Length: 114
Image (cartoon, rainbow, N blue to C red):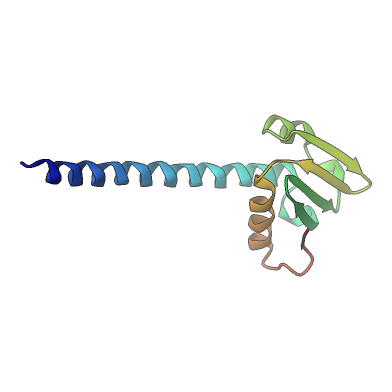
């Protein structure tokens, strides 16, 4: 077997491994978003969402249903509660979480992106 064929085979194997890793990572992120949504009291507890760089702001029907300790354990760098709003510092995941919640709620009219 010549060296070009060997490089092609190695490239294909590497590509398959890379795709498998990316798919597993995406699945893990989806599971984490489900868990975070649960810690916010479920999708029916969410009135409005807003994301701004690393900050995720959510207006809740009942803020007492939110498990702030569990959200912090999942990696939130900070949580501020003002009235029925939570401002959560999540990092770059805040935009993904907002999109995920919008898709579950089936609307984007009452959600903002700053």
